[in-house]
Length: 183
Ligand SMILES: [Zn+2]
Image (cartoon, rainbow, N blue to C red):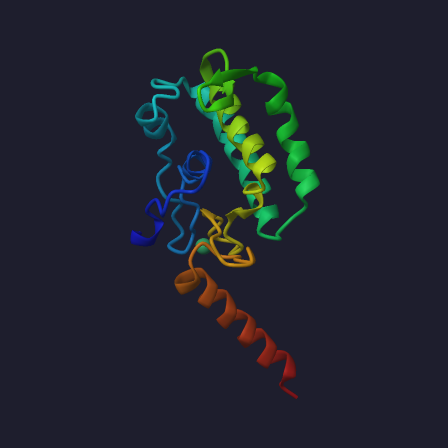
């Protein structure tokens, strides 16, 4: 699917969070869930090459918990519940503050899946602190849920692609409305 290629970079490492969530394409229109490229992504980013099946299972649980938080950012679901679901993942990882020439940076310590989770939660932490987190969203179309960075002026974007998911959802709503107003 051409539109589901990585889009313009998101700020401050959020592209990494977005790309992690997008390692599976959940679009079910053709009754097929897209291939799950999490192992390839972990290898390409160098975060965890050669992950074991158990590590992949844990990271997939984390990925879907993270997606819930991005859905809440798009106005779909409860943000507090989404954070609570992420809480056990945060407890397992270890972060330290690394001082660089440009200033302090949060870095995940250790190895394995906890280091991957820590690294992604560190990016989320920075984004919450800088106010960019609320713009990292998961598409509100129930069958899509693709992660994207909302660059709309007022941050009210709800779909990964207005041209595809947005128009389809609007057409559905119009149909429902006209059905309701029929005598
Ligand atoms: Zn979408």
